[in-house]
Image (cartoon, rainbow, N blue to C red):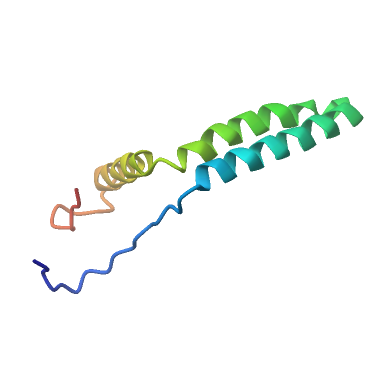
Length: 91
């Protein structure tokens, strides 16, 4: 049963196989960064940045992590007085 409402929503879809594609892209990017760091050792910091980026990008594949972050942001906004109690809550 559907309920009609004026509420606007967004739907995020994860395409099948996207994780494998992202992991493949990360491997390719890692090879490029290592090569660049080999050419110029001053750019070795790029490897550390890549590792941090990789960790965060893989989190993007888990919508549960995104939902937790949204709940945390909403709670912080409410605490800061940017949302009032009668603002719509979502599960």
